[in-house]
Length: 209
Ligand code: SF4
Image (cartoon, rainbow, N blue to C red; front, side, top):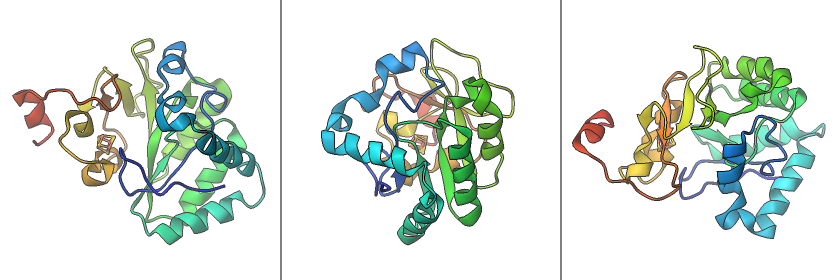
């Protein structure tokens, strides 16, 4: 089991991921179809094996201690939850609550579709309410609803503040920090992952560019 030290999108920030789709009980047909966890570097056997080992380890007794220690050693200000994968059961969510409690100076950010799953919605909502947790509800064009007004959203081509990385205005999330600036900011992403859009003056002003 291991945390990742960063990637091209998030920069030098640590993250933790799980196998795509099988750990995503709230997935829509749309997101299953476009999932970037099934493309690019994520199809390498070595990457898949790490995510599988992460899933197995996440069910074990030592998970909380191990992950807490790994994150602490990075001295990171923010931690990305689930570049790939999602919250798949209540005990797993409770483990992240304990990790976030032990690391109050780290901002945990990311999104989840598990708010759509009846047995998980309350638990992810409780996790999101923690003061250092910035988890948004993930939505897409096939499903514009968000769970309630307490949730900010990450939308694909929907509502929200346009992600500056999609417009080439920042190198990575570490330079931006918007996703862990407040818990209610809606963020909008480009559907064509990693391909820069042209930015118009109105959007540049909105993004402070
Ligand atoms: S809005 Fe900023 S922090 Fe959020 S995903 Fe885009 S670049 Fe990263």
